[in-house]
Length: 217
Ligand code: AP5
Ligand code: ZN
Picture 1 (cartoon, helix red, strand yellow):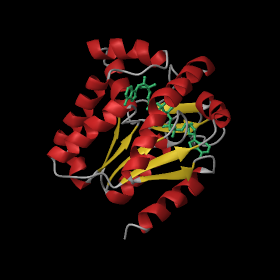
Picture 2: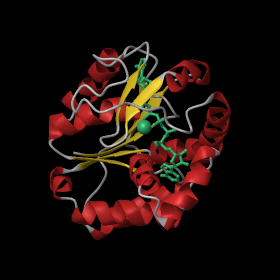
Picture 3: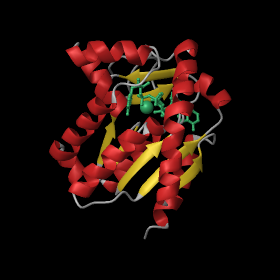
């Protein structure tokens, strides 16, 4: 499969993407996770990105396009296709992706929007817990780990993201509406856009995604 997931912070991109990866045996590329790994390693890019991310802004198009290109070309899991989570987030990024795919003589099959009202996102974001190494996320109330503050798979500690506070969320949402909503229109025009109601329970969102994939067959 070759697809992208578009949606505001907390829509459930990082919750659904690993399930899609498992179903299709493809790679899951999340630019937010890639940037956070640079931040954790304190690379020059990571130091620069951290400031931008904590303020809810966007890292430059060239940098994230370069990261995706590099992964698509070198990550063996991407041979089975890809699901992009959090990319493209601007129209220039969408154009960058198109030219990458044209070079590879490939096309995108799905651009799925996880649609949800801003009002529902505060609780999701402020209750989120993440396992930094894998990017797995939990929720204090909606999806608690088996053992408090502990990753189910590795037993390692869970943390809160430094941009998961009400103030940074406000900025992330306004960035989303200003810069990423036009990406939805981009794929609407291109004919591969579909929307899923992301306010439902995670299992219901997954069923809606499965329905879309069933129609491919
Ligand atoms: P990124 O990491 O992509 O963050 P985001 O887009 O703000 O999205 P989130 O990860 O917050 O939400 P999600 O949809 O993955 O939600 P999740 O499934 O975890 O980007 C971070 C930053 O990096 C950006 O702000 C930017 O600065 C930079 N960046 C990244 N990509 C970039 C790009 N392409 N260009 C430029 N800059 C870039 O779910 C959230 C919570 O809700 C969890 O606790 C989960 O358990 C819970 N939950 C999920 N689904 C449900 C449900 N159905 N019902 C109830 N709870 C649910
Ligand atoms: Zn995410």
